[in-house]
Length: 363
Image 1 (cartoon, helix red, strand yellow):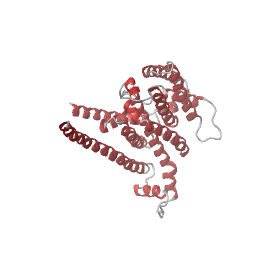
Image 2: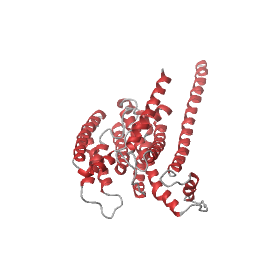
Image 3: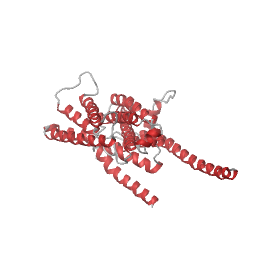
Image 4: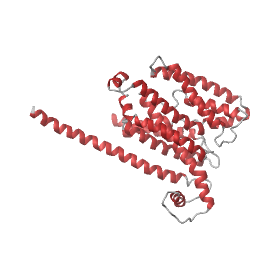
């Protein structure tokens, strides 16, 4: 017996020594991405038709922090441009990128499929139908600053998911395969309706197509304040179940034996991921590729542990979409390129590079 203990103790120490560096590296990665995100936000607010130096932009942003007093060396016009025009756009882009990324990571973990994305079960198609109806209706929401289109897009996204849930539910269980099939079928139906309405919309077709490919061009602080609490609450709920998502990488029967209430977990995570996705797309349109590329890239670089995968996806998604929006508004200035085009053009090659790099490491 003593010789066996002598053999196992060094093995245990070696395992602990191998685990702790991985934890430290991931924590350092989170801290590094937080610093990079702040730098990217400052950089993105300097880019625009009016040339404002990076140092001036940083000073304007820092001067708004509590307990910091900086003597202004900039004009009121510069401050208005940075704080009222550029900053809400940059922050909304970061929020949407974070929302799509954590929703994509949640779907990929829940469905145990790295190709899953936030639009897998009909959120995008429902939001698109609601938005198109908003474009075509000859009415508006009087007395509000958010407009009819985001409201109908959000309602359409939630309604489509409610229909998918009701179709996929079998008794007290919700088979994930049935959920996916119901989402694909309903998405195809809603997509066909959206295409028909867009083609018969006359002069509105350009605005509809631009919305369907995503844009932050009309971002306002009111949109940031509406989207922010929804995304924070949804992301917090998902993060609370990170360990359960790790267990769900086994099959459902094993996860149940390990103490996870699988059906309850599926409902909670699907509702949380759906809410953050619906909030993200309702104001800015359908932005593809973010929810699939960012979580998968994070998984390839830092591993599949959802306790780190989820926060790393949030930060990486925010950085990615802010930079993509900078390209969208500068590549063809003074015109703008739909941001969905940018995410596909620049995201796909990067994703393929990561896959190729991973394949070389494995083989």
